[in-house]
Length: 522
Image (cartoon, rainbow, N blue to C red):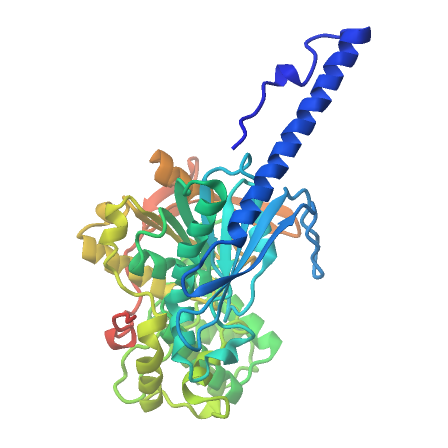
């Protein structure tokens, strides 16, 4: 690695004239050229090393240099001012039927901050998004992501147990192991710290890493994590079947959201009352009240609609035993995002299966037995991760109907039970329940601080995250700055004092039956 040369050699101290200025300028140009030449030589040496690198059960398929400062985006604005980077692509084949693509971006040695970041994917994965890599390369991070072994599309998992393993946990771990090998080969040293940052499916990846491979990462951010995976997709199917049989108009759906906001308004602070539901934990009585209010607001809602709403808000239960499979759609959130995503059922039952005919008795048992041991990240024994100094931040949105908050809140409480106290758990694991946040920007709090920075400061400097500021931004304008606290603390409001922190309730969600979240298997 080339050390920075003193700036006194690259610019004059005053305003010399004549030959002195010409000589100084010439020296600066010469040294700048020398630095560029040495950086290019370093990069060339690194490329040569990477091209000969041997990957266990895998192949280096691409090693290249990219100095383009702009990454175009056909669907939006381009990313600009990107630094030069080395790009490495791997194809990993740990088993027959397994094909995992990995992409690694490396900044030049002089720009590397000695940190590695693994990035999560979304949905069924199956592709690599270069924009996610580009967003971090400018900060000096070496960064990697994977398609999770599901290319070219989610149907790659139909009847293929190796893809189930890759999507569940193996692809992310192997990406991490081999990315570290590439980093060490390129820079001549391992990263000082490794972090993982993922949301949704990336949140599943994040918690699988903490649970199965605690040595992989020093700090992890798991946003809106789809970690209770097979119950979550049972929720999608439950909602899908109900909404297929009992459709709602757009006007009806808006009035149902409005009813949830109104009924829960008495539990809100003035700034959010009737605008969003910051804490959607509810009782059967609350569900009845919201349905009644919705029907008052919208007389077109029939008795049939009311029964459908009761099932949607309560969530899926086993048709034979009545056991809780997952919780229901949170008050104040969108129905449109709460169904679909049924590819996991095709993985088990095949592409020709009529998904509307899957029952919540024996069929759900078959589906759970096949996929849950690989996909679910439900192990509460985080002691190995905690003992090595690992730090973990979980984030859920109260209005997220794609990955509702229930399972994450309950997982957190089960970790507390395992560790014996909330105080002990909060030394390494914090959960933020964000008021009105959906699965991305939404009507509630939709802008947060950089949580990767938060976990880095926690791990490296001991700065435990506490109050953060969330923003409600609508059409580019900030309508609300709201202090947010780690669960179970909540934001309150007192006249004359303003925002204050209070202790909120613990738990309050039905626990998913244990047999729907069995122990993980390799």
